[in-house]
Image 1 (tube, rainbow, N blue to C red):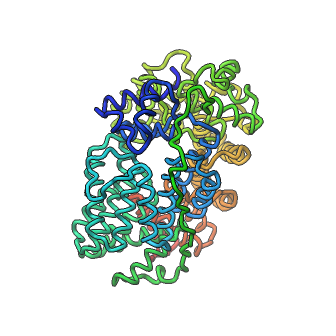
Image 2: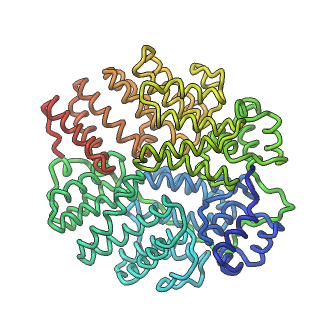
Image 3: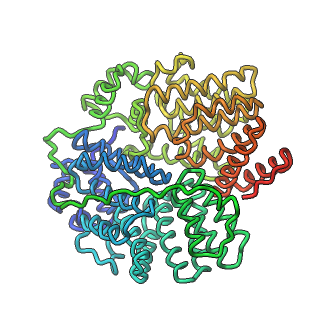
Amino acid sequence: MGIYNANRFIREARQKAGLTQEQMSEGICSPKVLSRIETGLTNVSHVTFQALMDRAGAPVSAFPVFNSRDGFECFYALKRVHFYLNAWQLKPARKELQKLEDRNWAGNKLYYQEWLLLHCRLQFYSYRCSHEQNFRTLLEALHITRPEIDLSDFRRLLLSQNEIRILTSLAQEALYLGKMHECLQICAQVADFLADSKWTLTEKERLQADNAIVCTKYLIAAGNYESALETTQSSRHKMALNAETAPLLELTFLTGLCCYHTGNVSDGEKYVKAAFYSAYALESCYATVCRDYLRRETPFPLTGEMRSRPDIPLPVYPTARVIDSDSLCGESYDMAADSYSLGNLIQDLRREQKISQSLLCRGLCTGSRLSKIESGAIEPDIMLSEALLQRLGLSDRVFAFWGSEKEKKFHDLKYKIMYERSLPSETLEAYLDEMERMIGEKDILYWQEYLFLKTIEQNPPGKRIAGLTQALQLTLPEFKINEICSYRLTWCELTILNNLAHEYRGTEQSYLCSVYASQIIAYMQSEKTDILLQNLLLPFTYFAHCRTLYLQKLYVQVLDFANTVNISLLKCNLIAYTGYLFFYAQALAECNFLNDAASTAISACSLSELREKTKNAATLTKYFREELKTILNY
């Protein structure tokens, strides 16, 4: 089953939500345009599709059809901005925002609205912004789709995720401007709206965390520390599980302040230090913000280590350029006109990267099928779409595809197995059995993901190589690791290789650990894969190989390997970075670089505490105390 046209799903989502066309289209497009979209007379790009589906509360974030290549590039650039801001990496976020402005936001008002929001978030994260200016800009952004909104009473409106983000940011700026009542009004309405929303759990938790940050700041400003602690703790725990860096840093610091002010000094110090040293490990200016606040607003006892570290500068960025959004369109367009489909994108990227059709589709589909996809004669199914995009160096996770019930169910099961925490063994087995029953004989990509998950989840360590190899050979039967740069690989294929690298550690072929890791890194560098796809793979290659070398007691090799690591990328992946530093600190100690080892260990312990991995922090602290007679006083 292929990827469907949008009109059917927009109509079904609207009817299911019980909305009129006037309610559904308000601020996005005219009811007449929506009527033409629903009847198939007018096409719709993903950004308008996203806004309409958001309005209906449907769990979808994008539709993979664009009105131009420029539209796609702006769409993807916005995803990169979100990625960098979430990692509190402001400089690359600013570069992406500038590229969007240079492209004139593809002439689209919804792209422009999101750009204004992200620009204001960049300004706020720099802590050098004018709160009055930010408030005005955010209000301009909101008025693009909600020109008549009343901030004191919007709880009955049907809001998109970007509108919720803008409202939450407005509440925060109102707080900094001393508009306490306005801040509370907005936060309370956003909280009520999110409680009843039908977005995915991950989406909802992140939006709730952003709102919880503002609510907590409000309660701290009001001196209500008990309620503030209750507000921040729940969201902090969820962000720790989801490894969402930016909200987790803020929520952890706020939790520490609340604990400190309510008399729980030991927990207060633990959380404050976790936030400060974690931000420092990430080279985030939030470390400077935290320390300045402690000095200015509290009697918190700064340790010598906290006082001695140099400031991470607070950057200054120009304010967002505000224009008349009426000059931009809503990106609906004629069915008769050429739309920029997924097939067009695949063909353009393949040609730009000088890849033959046979190389791109190797093991996935026939060359004839790929030709028909690129020409628009047929649409690929979801699994094939994802695989082709990944082989072209893009992350498919920025898209949300509509397909058959089978495709939806398989994806739901896959993500439950991969991301649900502490699944009981009987539940895991039931999920895998259900996946297996769904797969047809010729569903190669389904079989590959199923075999990979089954091997990793059910085979004991040391007995996974055969299962992983079998999964890889479904699409690459003659694969040779030393020729990796002559292939184009999917996320699943690369993840299998990552796991094979780790599994060879305890075998007579342990040298293959380094061979696989070095070849994966070489592939990711030579193919210049996009940062969003790199983040899903390369940081875990770094972490796993560092761990493997350390466990093999190859300490000098750990330090040599560190010279090849893209540390900036690693800092964007909280999970992998924490694990990497845990082993790297010990390798430094074993090589007698004791000062560097202690500093790295402090970063590793703080990041572990941030992520609620307290056992890891305790293990590392014990190692330094017992093996090196060193107390990590920080």
